[in-house]
Image (cartoon, rainbow over the protein chains, first blue to last red):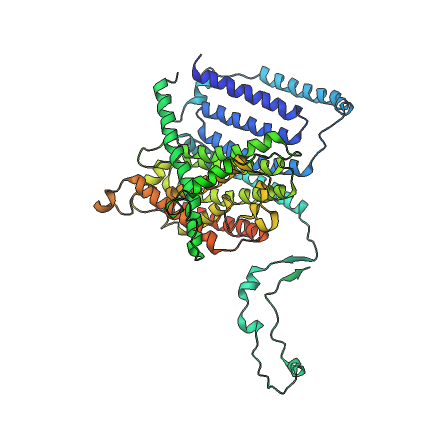
Length: 221
Length: 326
């Protein structure tokens, strides 16, 4: 057994067992941490297949951003870790049914799946001297540019939808308006007044109203 | 199979990086205290050793023989793992840093992405510490830190994209070699500014040290930590500062390249130039800390998402356009 094969079996073993732990562990925080472990091992498998760009992107996007948000939410929610066994059994039948349908569909698909004999060689073959990153870039941005753009648009629509669903304009929120603050001049807010020592403070009421406090923190309605 | 000789060499190289790195971390804390003291017209540490030069070791020993306290309500496993993770990640990034031509442990094709991935993992140590401590202050600090680091990673990512567009490679050595004629700081000055500010936010340093704001959160995510576990967080933070300076000098200041390719400069070995550039950037880190007050949290988020993100996106498009035209 070569070192590569050994590493492959270690990575996939840890990957599968941590994936099982994600769904079976009672503590949701541990669940997310096992998910991260699974991502790491998947990245390791990518590196074994000489797809180092995909491996790094998997870690940057899924571990560095998506899983952080998962962890964020799971820690905030602070779910009760003890669950009664009866609750689990109630979903058992439905779960088995859905899982069975999925397995059946996969089997049906794979029955009619023809793999060409050279496909396995092609998976690992570098595209004529190009590095991994160059090859992926050429595929995505040259050959499939339109499809890639369409995928981007779909994501954009999803993002806008999510923002519209969650955005609510709250009243009485103090907001800092940087533009107003920077536009504020000394002459807008400070006025020099000559007061003779004998005059009273009341005379100041006759000041003109031009000194409006524009740059002040203003209420948003 | 791996042969034993290679393995021994690998361990040797690793030690050659880790030991100077740990010494640099120790003396960075000393330099920080001295520099800030000088800026505030104080003397700084001057009792232990000549000019206080042994102060870092005295501090380290003091930390080591304190008692490790694990709070009763804490999650002991994650509580211990969090500082280990922070420290381990801050060391593992150094595997791909080129100190000179060919002076790198692992010269991988996607070096810059590896660094980006490692720095984006740094947030886990902090979140785990905050959650496992089971303390309100820790948790608030961890949440702040998570949001802050995820936000500023976006702009660091776009900075990296502009650099790799200009260099045409993800390999760190090739990025340095691409700066033979001109350092990237000259055509990409605005991105250098964005990178340095984002680096401050990414390492949780002043003026973005909200996760450990001592005035509001006592000490943030590390409030429950003591002794060695605290020391590991501390070492990790300073090692990350050094790492960010190294990345900054590779991306913008030409790594190991001398400022001009003419004799008096080319006689100096590359690693010396690299260290000088890193030291300068580290000094900027300390200078900023002594100069600016802490940002407010909404200002921090506004800066990241409403200023840096649109501007760096624009700059990416501009760079790509210029490269296509040329």
